[in-house]
Length: 321
Image (cartoon, rainbow, N blue to C red; front, side):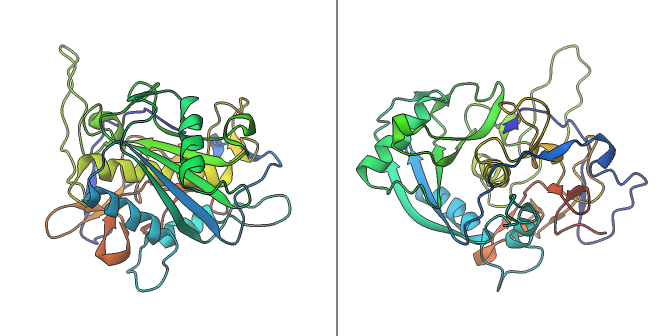
């Protein structure tokens, strides 16, 4: 789950030059207690992804998000470092049978709920009723290899959104939906809290008398603060739901209901030298948009790193070592 933690930091942006940082932080294996709790990971050879678009959506924004999801499983014809290269680190995690996390996410269906059938004020629990509406109206209820992605528009409020979370993952109850299936929820923060859930594309407001010094905002690679921020949160949650879909897979900490998962460990780290309040070395294009990964159709994205199980540190394909 992506909790709200601010990184009021100084960023280093690179056009390909090496990042000369004396402390190459990127997480510390001495501080990490990531363990496998013998539960499943999402390991089916092909995972069917179903999107539920809740609220009113701009088709251009939907295309940007779809292209990111398509990029996860598109290793060819995409310039390195790519989104699919980033997913290879996620795939390192296995279940007790030795099966790795899926390498193929296939967008298998979409449901558009533009009438706000469950209102514009949602709770974590009501998301399950929203999924039930989708699977009884159009989408299949796929308990074999299905993963459901609930995306809410910028005018929809969610319990704890902007105060404690930017996104979360969980699983449905069969008593409500008809089967137990993993799902992810992410909201568009453009109106409500871009400085919290679309950081670093928006900055926290200064606190009077606190000596706060505003940092530069980063230009979003696809030109939309809310959508680019949302895509980073979607990536975060996809990595975590895949490695801990039933809350008994890979995580650290004593409380399975509030786990520290593989993306939580690298919150705020996007490149080499990152950590401890530093974003790390990333790229900028000729329009000075900031990114670290390439996607299909020439898309670019800024996606946080995840914990690499073999390297025992945060890692992404744009790493310089």
